Picture 1 (tube, helix red, strand yellow):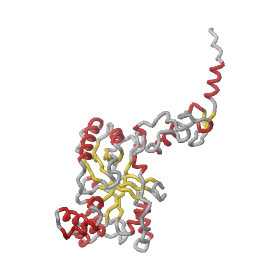
Picture 2: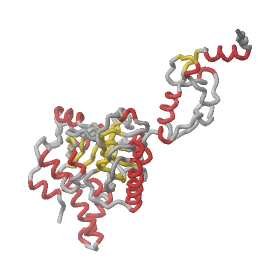
Picture 3: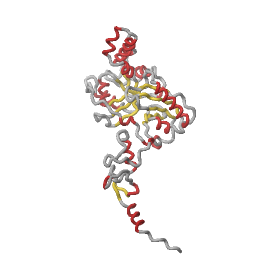
Picture 4: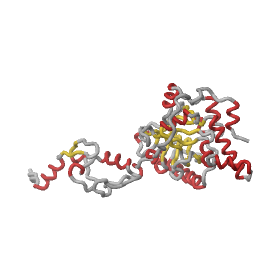
Length: 360
């Protein structure tokens, strides 16, 4: 029988290195070097990392830096587009807002409102606040037609653009970043399902492009992709929402970052993501509804609680029907669901509804 060749000195050195223990610079766990990589020019204890730890680090800093903050060399490997984090997870919140009015908002209702600050809940403008924004929208329209008596009111009021974003708004919470807000409370991102504003031409074009992309990868025919104006923030950052038939494959098994929105009383999967990721998630799935979203609204949880206490918003859970009934959605929420708000948990009366529908 042939004798196996004796290992060379170089091979022995390579085997020794392969069995050498190293420490990940991020999680600080010690591993054998085959499970670690050297993604930059750093040496010593900062040289090795787990590939999965590097990915998490890159995702958190993908919008600010693509290089090692120590040696300044570009990471190797770079983060692939499909592994990038959705921009929604990095939103900034307003650090300045009045404190909550605890006198008008008992502790039990504060706790009930806080419990509803999660994906799948609705942030609904109160009838009192809707009456104010309705007057602003009406005055803006009158001023644009040359009605002098409305001009002074229009100038004193907030802009028509912002008032229309909020008027009778019904904002679906799509993401809650735990302690990610500027004030170190939770960051809340929501999209308006009830805005009557017309989308920009670019959004309509994006919706058509999304439909074409979905048609190539989804199972069966894809219906019209609806365009929604969803808020005054991040209007230039694209975001899409799909309602998909249930799948045996869990969302966690699919590659690509998507925000999962749990809606009560349905098995359908509701996800929100950027276009290149949303089409990946739809591959081989039946698309029930599709939306191109223009803009969003952003609060910290403390800011939202403050605004709820000052009778601007109420909170309730969303329903599967909410994706179909934009025009009557605001009225439905107050007449049938009793959102938690500062005044009481009872529905609004007829006079408040009439005032909220606008001034004449």
